[in-house]
Length: 244
Image 1 (cartoon, rainbow, N blue to C red):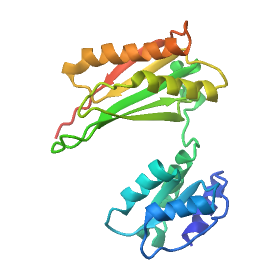
Image 2: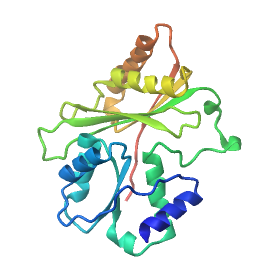
Image 3: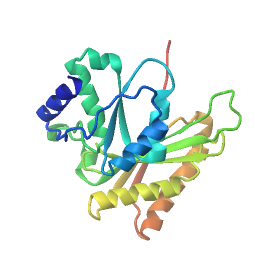
């Protein structure tokens, strides 16, 4: 069966899975109720594997309920991938599960390790997602991630809503403080000596405005964390060029 083969491949790759606590079909799925019931019945539940049919809004409802309301990780799989089992598909699913559970899928070899990772460094990435063109009210969503391990393979994330179509990340100071705190906790008190920020989604006309506000917010986050803490900060704006 699909589950048997998934568990077998997981064991081959060094991933330790417990046997599923429950497996059942749902004729009329309702994630809002189903996830709440599962959380109540299995308090230590870590992940729900959901087999999806075609079409509908079930995927969006599962992610919204699990990620923002109940607090249960989920992995969705199309039914066609369950009936026609391929090793490559199983491997891809395990990569996703491993990342969601806090595992590391890839690390750089020691010979290929860039010099910047030889000392404690925090690699950050940030972007702001705006509503569609016809939406004049919904907030924009700012997301910032930051590495917290020596290989820059594990990341913490901070997400905030902000005013409609505002590109500057309004709460970057507090987001950076929280990400620094995650770094401190994971490394048992070490602070990054350098911070590298990759900032996406900034037009050339906004360069100076974004740089002056966001770089200052990051610097303030450092000094508010510790008065004399002034790591080197490299702020890089990443631009995409599509030629069709």
